[in-house]
Length: 247
Ligand SMILES: C[S@@+](CC[C@H](N)C(=O)[O-])C[C@H]1O[C@@H](n2cnc3c(N)ncnc32)[C@H](O)[C@@H]1O
Image 1 (cartoon, rainbow, N blue to C red):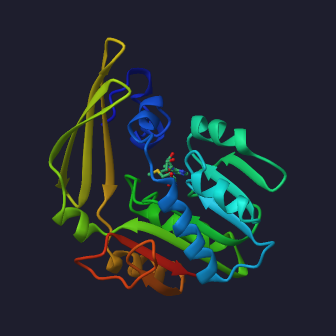
Image 2: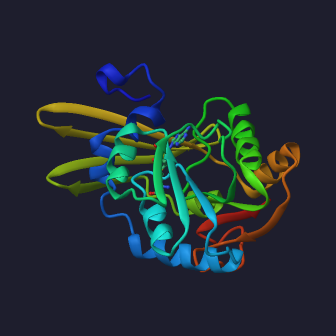
Image 3: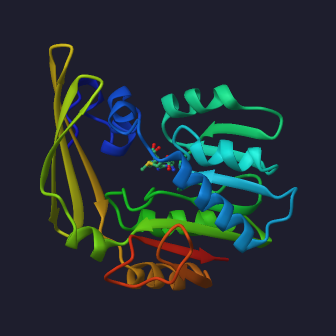
């Protein structure tokens, strides 16, 4: 569990994703790849120019900001107040950011809802996954589409690097990865400004069959499945991503 002192009573995903160290460790996130993916996804969905898009679990808004630059009316939503504060620096009349829990249905309806870069499967309680899917479904317009971009668990497990040290901004992040009780764990230990930290990322090892089952239960129609950001076919053992399009 997350050990960050006064944050220790929060869920790990609320404290770690809100911590400045999370943003330091992942500061080199691939913006080009994110933009190519958004180009491919929006043209595949054939979204009209004035479409309203919700980037659900937007982090600091790398996808939201790019989607808005393409002309879409975009809302980025995330549980992390710090990420939303940072993303909000880029806000404008057609780009908004808000603190929001993905389990909650939105007041507004969207033409497209994107949940990108493995922003699903964090909850302790399985029922919350279903609640999130239903909230996405209920926040779509009649003709709207949603996309969940999740890791491909079989590929990730086959290629798991058990231990590594990543040095970013003079901090040595000691990372351990392992699979336990159907979750993929990433333990991150480091020392910064004389303090020792230990965070644990924990994501449920959800496979296509798990999503299919939940979607059926939520009354969601799965339209298409892709295996990478070029939107090529999904192969269970070889694809890096599990990208699901539904309505
Ligand atoms: C792996 S990051 C991805 C961020 C962003 N989509 C990107 O690609 O840069 C996962 C994000 O999910 C957010 N998150 C976790 N639990 C959430 C929840 N219950 N509701 C909304 N956002 C949540 C975290 O704060 C974090 O920003």
